[in-house]
Image (cartoon, rainbow, N blue to C red; front, side):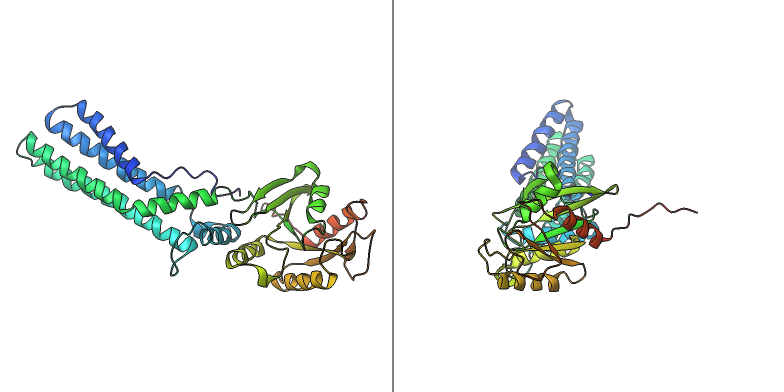
Length: 335
């Protein structure tokens, strides 16, 4: 399952949609005469309004059907800097309300089309038909303009979500955590070699690293998340905490890297407090403590000791993480 928001189409502004509908209708009208011209113009304008508004909605994935990782991550993003929603309704719920408004407008445009087709059939002459068609155009424009705020909100949501990192929730995932400068990115880069990607969450100023390794024909995903799992929970804002909740759905194992040498700039006691908080937060999956820079200090109790710079026990730690994941691929059912 790839990033579900990256291919969302551009959301039109109300004015753009109205201009498109009426200019196409004018061309359709010029191709015919009399009553047929007015009927064709009505049909064309109403169809463009109704169909384009419907497409705005149907191009979005069903949030209830999304993997919980992407659903919670989208909720975090949309409740944050994009300011989708209000104090009473934020995030994905607010986006759903905007999509519902656009659905209403699409159906209303279709209703106007049906109502005025009937009126046009009963028009006394062409001038009367033209007057009715203009009334229909005015009502179509009014309906589309009523959902301008929703269209703008949907467009803002698209911009925020389309650049989410391409993380595969269906792949076994090892999350790498720990304070800055303990060697997390170096570890991910080392074990994934050149196969890692660098992406950003929309609500952080730091990049995340996503790498892949293959073991016994199974691809494992390693995720390093600076800005989220590199400080105590009380220092995260509400949006970052929601993103950590999303990572709970993703992680099959967590490696917490610590640096007993203190060269990272954080006392080992503080690092272990973060480790304990992560053990509590990710209680459903294995959490391994890994002492990096072990060539400089081993003065901490850990599950494994390694030195990325000295290439000491790096592959051993990776193997331990894969073993902790204990991934069993789903096999096709056999009689």
